Image (cartoon, rainbow, N blue to C red; front, side, top):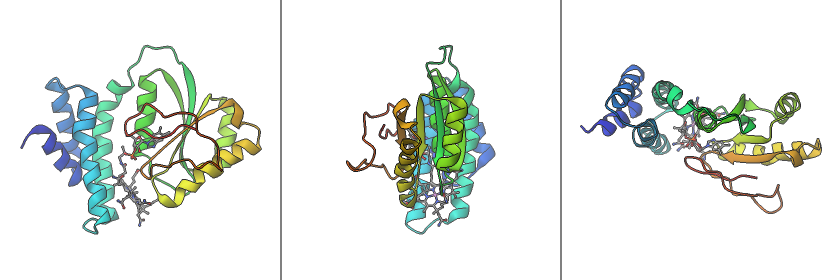
Length: 204
Ligand code: B12
């Protein structure tokens, strides 16, 4: 089986240690970290999502796959984060209230760090109040929100609205991302640009 397909298989079947070892072996073989991420680790997770949607997989399988993906990411992390650029801006990053998916958020954090951003991680299930508190403490220039569920997408707009109410919105660029691909509606906070991220999403 070609190497990347083997890595897909290890993610799909939730093999944590072998996934980490295979990731390391690909690096040792001279493959660039970003290629291992995009060609090896992430496509496996897409298959897992499809299997869950079709009813073939349950939460337990998704969880095992998530652990395998995280194990591979841990191997890549130091390489993806390595940057000698002076911090260009501070980003407050969190998964919105009601949502506990954090792999994508963490990956975005790694990519941001690798591109010279300082990242404040608000974790998962981050309420507007918590994000506002962290914003007041750390004074970021960017707010990054992640949501993977259709049901938690409105929490993004609610969070932005809470920042507006507190008079904090105007000092921030807001970037959002996640699987449901939130398309901003004109009535809610206005979009300004698209982010340059893997599986790109919108910036408000
Ligand atoms: C792993 C996983 C889980 C794990 C999460 C583990 C963890 N620590 O994150 C567990 C098992 C806990 C889980 C639980 C659930 N899950 Co789930 N999960 C997934 C799965 C398979 C993979 C997500 C993932 O990590 N992908 C890999 C990362 C790297 O990709 P990503 O998250 O999309 O992130 C990228 C971009 O979106 C973007 N991005 C993400 N965030 C941000 C933020 C910013 C600022 C920017 C710029 C970009 C950005 O950049 C990232 C890098 O490329 C997806 C299916 C899928 N393929 O997406 C389902 C999926 C998201 N889950 C789903 C569901 C339904 C659930 C549950 C409700 C199941 C249940 N019945 O309980 C619960 C919800 C729990 C909760 N309250 O949050 C559905 C959502 C359907 C929907 N439209 O609402 C999906 C799509 C599966 C499916 N096909 O049905 N899940």
